[in-house]
Image 1 (cartoon, rainbow, N blue to C red):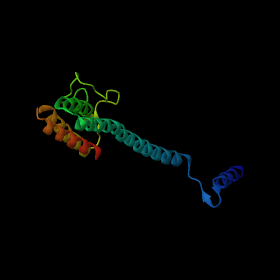
Image 2 (image 1 turned 180 degrees about the horizontal axis):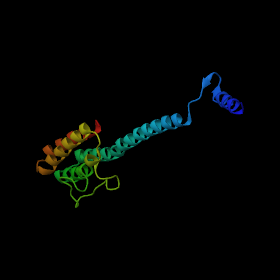
Image 3 (image 1 turned 90 degrees about the horizontal axis):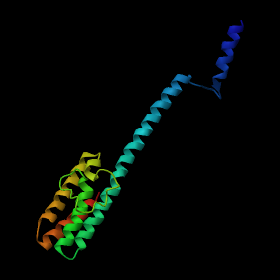
Image 4 (image 1 turned 90 degrees about the vertical axis):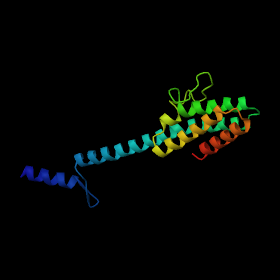
Length: 154
């Protein structure tokens, strides 16, 4: 009889306002699933946000290249742009030039998680290389303006 009353009391304790509470294991499971999903969402957002300052800095230097008054000035700032995009281990990185993104990770391209974004950044880097490789001021300046537009649209 005592055991029966105890079970009845447990059943009453689990009922509140007409709703039956789930067992602790179900609550723990749901909490774990929701917590994991939230952590993944936050970490993927953080990764995307991590590349944004690098891209923004690269765009700023492409803009400085586009405003330069001679081909050497354009090349200098395009090197800075390229250094931000490819990172220290990337194609075209020039350690003799400033890397304004040195404290921002491994470069925008290596840091990009999204394939489409990575492809767009690679195209911008290719265009920056073309501006660096030319001796023609108008060509270099055009490349810088194109790179700036490409990066600002990101």
